[in-house]
Image 1 (cartoon, rainbow, N blue to C red):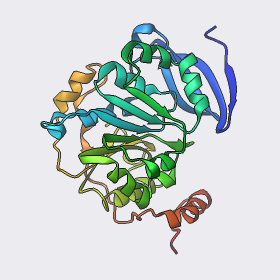
Image 2: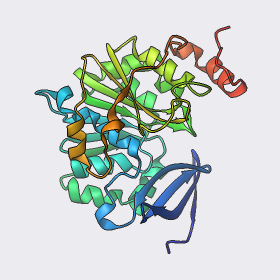
Image 3: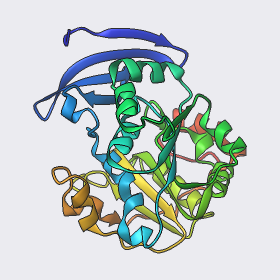
Image 4: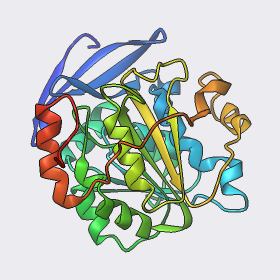
Amino acid sequence: MYNDKIEIESPYGHITISYGRHDKHRVRVLDIDGGMESATYIEEELQNELLFEYMYLFDLMFDENYLEDRQINDILLIGGGAFHYPKYFLAHHQGNIDVVEINKVLYDISNKYFYLEETINKFDKNKNRFHCYFENGRDYINRNKKKYDAILSDVFIGENLVLELHSLEAIKRIKESLNPQGIYITNIIGSLSGKYSQNIKNVVKTLKQCFKYIYVFKAQEKNEHQKRQNLIVVAVDQEVHFNIVSYHNINQKRYHQGMINHVDDIDYTNGHILRDKNLLKLLFYLKKYDKFNPWE
């Protein structure tokens, strides 16, 4: 059973479900068009734990120095994948989570193979904590009237940014969808310097047009700045001195002090403000050239 591959076609790519091991534990892996999308532990006691270290940094929204006397009651996640973080959230936190996922096939697969249904039945018995919307993330943001305490974004095309969710126009709508002093957290794949650093420079410069404070975290502190990696970007309107102790309490095995030190030595001067009108031109240049220069 655990050696068989499962192949499924979807409107947004060819899905492969396979099996492997992580830290000596059996895992089920979800690939889309050959790239890893998500995974889950198979052992029952681990099914709602995270395999990917970058996702623990989404819990920066629960930092005691950020929250002060506030609570996180309602969050939005753009990009469900195999619903890895929503399962963890339901099992480990209070509050409600809305998820926007364009590919309904992933939701069906997550229920059947990635234990989403079991998690909902156990931690959302009244079926009022978890809701999923099957649509384009930008379309949802554009029409949304609800206010969230936190908005998370974890959306890619392969390893590339979904540019329409990172434009200035999109960020303005995200900001409007947050409660006062709300927090926005997005996962970016790129480097902090060198060939693959333009993504983070553009994202940070764009976010700075709407939020007062931007913090960038490496998912793994040991990674060199030049390495292509998961970078977690936090945007807020108040200065926050993130408290390392609070993260030790969330998962003793995963966290060590260095992991949540934000990076403060990045040169963003060559960043560009992403705008809807530039996105097609930007995409063309990113595919054709190693360097970024769509405005010449």
